[in-house]
Length: 344
Ligand SMILES: [Zn+2]
Ligand SMILES: [Zn+2]
Image (cartoon, rainbow, N blue to C red; front, side, top):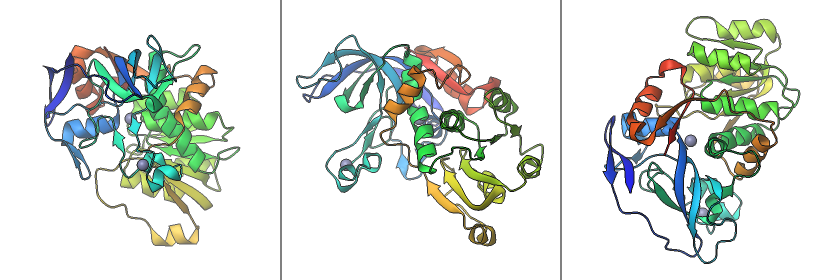
């Protein structure tokens, strides 16, 4: 079968590798149908690492996938051949302290699709996943919904960890697919005013279409002032969704006393800094987000019920053979790209 493998910094090629086979009784063999390109895939593509997780070439990334079940192990009950499914990329051990505490996203022995040293990704024609990673696509759900359920679950989770957004005014700093997922999830929970910042004007257009009261570009205007013009007392919750120090600082500046900063973005630097005076006097709470736990089903349900619509998120499609072109487009933020999908 074919696999699209990273072979160096900004390099990838299609290689022929053996088709995977079922090993464990809970294994499911999946024929990939669609994959969404994630910011973390791009980090591995352009830098060969995220923090201490380093790519050993050749390596396959990709973890936002959906496909068709083609074969199942003896004990599998949740899915059967012919089912279309969303693939949850996390494969926890289910035995460590974290798993037993219901925190299987921080499992001590976590294997995650397309994470160096853990598991190859799903930029290949067939993959094997444990049954617990397979979520059937019911009703109106398409493979795109299945793929987007991964980032969307992070949005649902971030909103949950914020303590709830009902009638509260929020800021979303960075409006890529994760920032947009946070917004769409927040809208299903009765959020108040939504303020969005991003450096790409095309994304601000989408943000306004999706109902942001103010969407501003921090490179072109004083967005702190602009948001304070609308929200005189400051915002209740800030979601940092781009991993940038300036966004973190603007978020802190805009939070009202007792406000909460939820950090979802993945920075390219090693240490955040924060203003002691402001964070202390305003008694800001800080919540970091590590992916998500147990939110895939809710993300799928919100899409199945029509509460979340992803039409404005999926902006580009490429055939499998043109994966490199897709990665280059996303890397360079060209052509108003939000989420680019690969069709197998
Ligand atoms: Zn992702
Ligand atoms: Zn575990």
